Length: 388
Image (cartoon, rainbow, N blue to C red; front, side):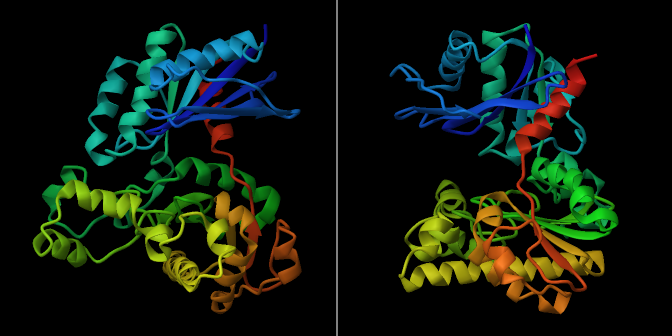
């Protein structure tokens, strides 16, 4: 029976999954998602031939019950061969995990200690790992960290201007979306040739959004910092905000910490500014001026942060768009590029509309579109750690 890798990305109410196989365990066999955990769970899946059928029973409401059902579905449909391991996206690796890790009790305990650094993400990532350990205790599991790619940054790019004792307690700039940036960095030579080793900014634009400055395909700076709130305007997250505004809400509005957290993570960003939606597709299709204002702010902050990272790089050779918005929203790419002429970027409107790989005219800097694939990165790392 062919050996395979199961890739899992667990959130608070969903589990995204993919199965990889083939001689090198790098061929995607299928992918899907179980969403609505805790309310009304919904299953979707597909492979190269199209959608795959599956009906979740009403009893599926937790990570453990969802994974149990998923294993039954995979085996009943002949979709899973001899699983070699499971690979997980884990948001936070802290200061010590700069590479993927084969999970054991000690490593899991260390990752649980990082929950205060990512309280909205880390517990759900670990819940899937714990659930799978109960269901398949002999199955090796590998954690791949969203923070690891940014461990190459110089100390000055990781520092917060707080008293030193806070840095010792873990308060520093970590950066996220590292698995996406790692994939794009690996694709740069085929897209940029010798310029791949130069000054490149990758824009991962989606419901969560950030930028990463690369030199020699290594992270030297990023727009996200201590948390996934920092930097760009996102679907429901605020991005960079004056800490004084937060102090005002705490002091003058007596806003409880939990309410403030909900405001910043779930009620702000495109959704909060537009009052319509966090989905860029909906906003681009809307005639409501508030939708246009939300898009304008998204674009303004993206161009502003690209300028900041260009300063960190001391110039720019190429800009790469990735993520759901970056790969698919040609109007947003066009608006961002229109603000970057001073960096040598001149949009080719026809190429951008066609979603070509290169979307700019010849110039001092170029812009490109590369579809990201975090699951492929997780599968590759998992295969490397568990196969001889």
